[in-house]
Amino acid sequence: MSRKEIARELRRQRALGVIDPEVEEIIREVDAQRPRSRADCATGARPCMFISCKHHLYLDVNPSTGSIKLNFPEKEIWEMAETCALDVADRGGITLEEVGAIMNLTRERIRQVETRGLLKLRAMAEDEPRSRLGNDFDK
Image 1 (tube, rainbow, N blue to C red):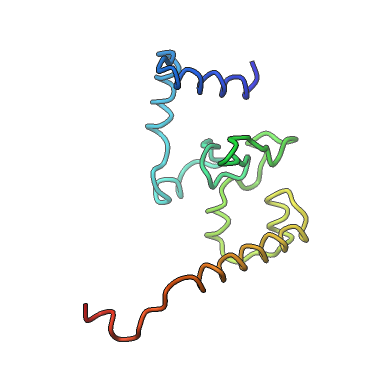
Image 2: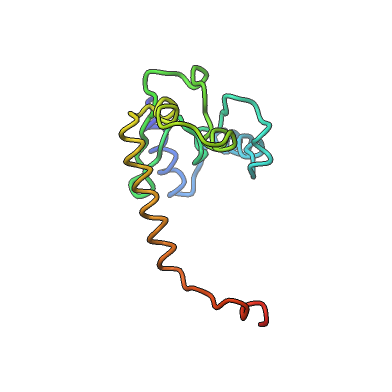
């Protein structure tokens, strides 16, 4: 059975309210071990086994469709040099080449993503209401 079929079957069972007790127990076990905050996972084992974490670099999930994209289809998770985007961020600034190697993308594509992200941040900052200086603390 493929991963897609397993996920589809689990969604179907959840929708019907009937989940296999063995599967339910495995889900509870994994959830009990899952880190709840960055402090919980920062010192955790690497490579990180929680590939469903939104910061994991092994796969991406499209929130609108639920489709899964493997970022490194030719590698197994234990073959990856980096598995957590937060670990990379904790190291500080890195070059576009280094980001490209980590994300399995070209330097140019990383530059495009960076530019788009900065434009979005700039737009969000411009949409934010400006507070009046000095008066906010009086309230």
